[in-house]
Length: 307
Image 1 (cartoon, one colour):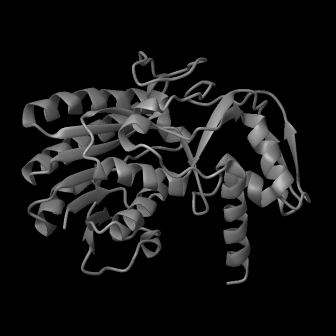
Image 2 (spheres, rainbow, N blue to C red):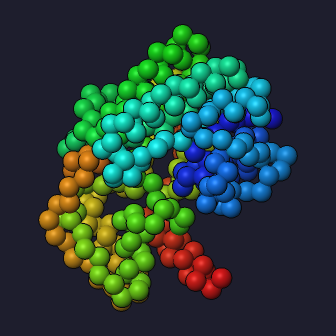
């Protein structure tokens, strides 16, 4: 049985990956804060799933729980919200914490280290985005993700560890954090409220959470080589088209209003990712249409309302 050490396990992406890894037969050791409000969203501890109590500030506690592992999946990263993305101090600490995680992975004998980079590393692009493009990040978040990626690649080359740098675009799903555009639109369109939006004329791309976990698990099974990999869906459109699709799938008691562009720490890029590289290594993989993904979210919200 292969073993995975994972940080950031209670995040939206993390907890869904944990469930997929366990289903695939991996043994998972997940680092969590003892006071985390999201621990209950993780599976119960069993012979294949173990909780390790700690934080980014004391990552060495991992070595109190486990002495060797096959893979290290480092998804913990502070300041991923809009305010934190512009904070140099927070993002700089993330680079330091991530290097500590990488050193622990080396001591555990891990054969690969998996890091969730971001489309923010590319900066503001208005053309199809491939992994070979030059990066000009705007936010401190994007700059720090890129900085760690460069440092980690060099470290892993020397240590013969495969470094898998995932450049993740927009993932959505039923248990995402409140306040995302998809979550806001789904809830307000079905409850008689109006959503005030920017002009939403930039290109965008969404990947459903189940497709994301399927993609990552297939990449792990294939023992892919060191490299940067765009992680996204295949449906790129103008953002307002996604908004109107959610509206037409709702009960339409709410409404939406497009306005002026909203300023954010990363400017207003067009997200038009190219995922030929991932396709070439994993072949056919799960693709959920945006409509089906939204229907599943609405179904889950409706079920929760009866609990």
